[in-house]
Length: 243
Image (cartoon, rainbow, N blue to C red):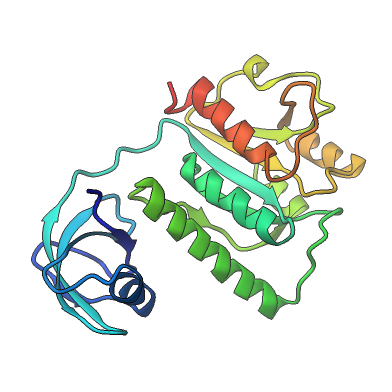
């Protein structure tokens, strides 16, 4: 039987005793109804899993002891930095969740010309906190031991200006080349995917001028939540750890 696996932002080491945060405690004690003596897996994003035993369980408080340490997660064969045009509601959650499961190393939400989500700063910070929770949950489910970083929201033009020394790919159904016809990246690549409304002509010009290479995924136009999954999976098969 697979042991429950939860994230904590507290640094972990062997023989440490600690009280878990509220969310992790509620999940173990109230959702899973675990009792003292139960075994669980914890991780703090440092690249390792830690075996732990529950010492005390209450409605809001769970205390554990670290009893073992697993192997370190190897570095990715391909580091993918996903620049993701912000989509509405569950579409954005789904894209982030599946991108993490498929192995991206970094995600930056992007404001684009045709982005339909425009929020004041305070609400955007709440949205970023929510997306961070999506990242953590996807790592818990998929077994990733390192947390992909979730960057602050940025304008597309600002983000593209940082690509002077990097390898960038912009997904565009009008591009002449497919992914397999592009030269392989050297361990790191920026992948740029637009929102529901797609790219404007001016944005495509920005990206090409910044050194991004256009690529399409076959003859079909994919939805904003489908495109990142298909592109990341194809890149992992061509150049990453699906091989």
